[in-house]
Image (tube, rainbow, N blue to C red):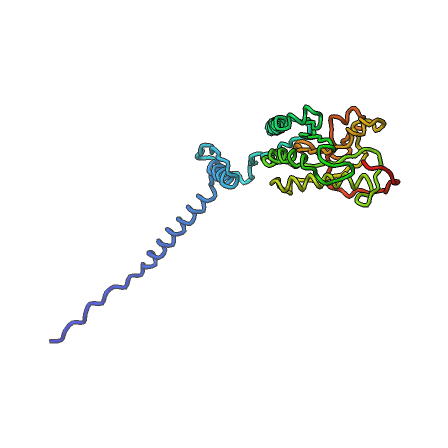
Length: 293
């Protein structure tokens, strides 16, 4: 008996509908995404921009609440940037004026002056030493007869004892120290010193070297010679010439920017000020031969 042929399955001609449905679904999802992108919220955009500003400027900001439902505006809105802080100028203490450190400087200089006055009380009473507070700083005027022999620049034993006491105070001072030498107007022309410039400078250097030996820092010291050109008294009398022959030790105040032009021209005013300058090269004109200062 012959076997029957297997029943052939019916071919399905509607399978394309599955692919079509998938395509329509993907197309729908694509348009939904496009719509959501085209409907950006302006509130969210402002929050984002403010957050970026805060991140780059370091200043915290409070973002506005997000408002839902507002359509996105294609025109960019103005963003208020924080103001640029102004740079603070440092405070500068001008000479002769007060400042945060002016009182401290004046207090320190006053203490130095009082200490020197106490140590040199005996010499001050004799008139050999004078201690003054000036706008330039503390000025210690020492008569030349206390320090040197006539026409000489070598310190006497009496001078060494006096300068040792001054050096002990100067060791604790952090300000510049200038030693100025002065003479009267009587010319000098010896084998050792050809002019009053040379004599006054050599005397200032001798005092500076003495201070260095006693422990004063060399970088704080300056020696300057002024010859006969800055008198404090008239050179017409022996008493005036004796007053003009002196060495001044000046503890320079950091509040002062004095130069040689600061020296008063009035002899009455020069009693209260001693010229302070930076080291310069002085031009020397040899005077005519005569007696020493």
